[in-house]
Image (cartoon, rainbow, N blue to C red; front, top):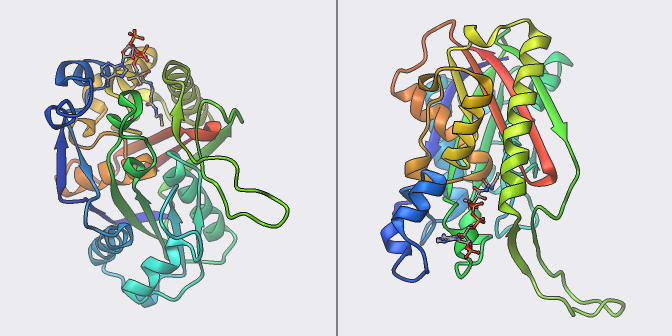
Length: 315
Ligand code: COA
């Protein structure tokens, strides 16, 4: 397939590190040094699905296609107020889309998983045009009393439109199931057979272990995918890495021995927006005119699961 449109949408409230230090035992210095984050967009009176609809419509507008042209809609989302129907249906109702659709929950690498699925449907001859939207509000997963997690996240939506083409050179998904490193649990309704005894558990994270996993998953995943498709890292124009932590990105750069100016970053303004991170970065860079036709772009993301994935595209 080939990406012909990108879009993104962000909540209007911007929370700076200084604002966080008004009610948390933290500081701009600590957050900046450990993560590279200076501020993040946080959902307040917006609805998550409105951000998803805005991002999707911007991507469609850029693509020149209409909702009636889309054959498949994939939404990547970790949490939303909608348990059922899926967020895909809620967004589709808003923008007037009626093709087959589904949600996936693959945490931060959700965009790569969605790209892989779109390509598989396309190669199976089932679709020509696919809309992917990654719609995330991780600020509603962390406890805002927990300074070790809540400072890391920001909300937003990113979308792409894909059509027939030969520009996805390869995708590689990976899983190392290990569910106590990064998780959140919520209590379901009581039944006559199960008492609602537990409490919801907000996002829990073993930061250092996740950090190590992220660096290894990205460097190994990207290397093995580039080997598989026969492209040298020196021929890659842009490495679009999940914006979780600037120090993770710096470690990846060190391991890969690639010039750092080939790693666009926007984490300072967004924090970690889960699966929306890569498509928001893609859209920002695209709208700034960073990409030239023929550029080789590597996407790589990692997160809860523990899941990771990489993709190589020709722009
Ligand atoms: N402000 C100030 N101090 C903080 C803090 C904050 N926001 N958060 C944690 N601390 C404190 C800790 O309590 C600890 O204090 P102590 O030494 O008195 O116990 C100290 O800082 C060091 O904590 P530690 O967790 O060891 O720090 P770290 O260097 O590992 O950095 C992370 C923490 C979370 C920034 C880092 O582990 C990380 O980025 N991990 C990956 C997280 C991630 O990206 N997850 C999503 C992947 S998709």
